[in-house]
Length: 78
Image 1 (cartoon, one colour):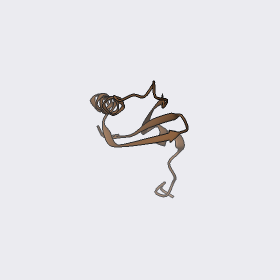
Image 2 (cartoon, helix red, strand yellow):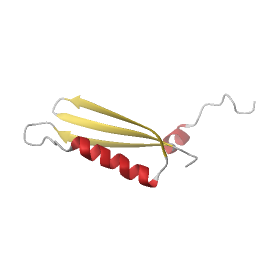
Image 3 (cartoon, helix red, strand yellow):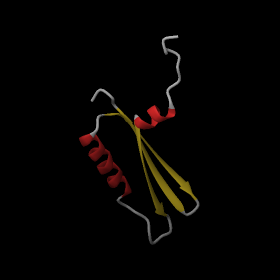
């Protein structure tokens, strides 16, 4: 009809989101105590250049690897 119920195309959704993934080795010699600080700095830089609507941060542990995923929903109006 007028497109009210039309599902967003995946390309549009991808364009509206920015995902940053950081992985680190979790063995005792390569742990990164500055991971939280780095996460905040990355978010600050993204906000400096792009309008941001929401930020979601997830941390996953898979065996010997730790992954930090920062999902940023971009604000089209900014």
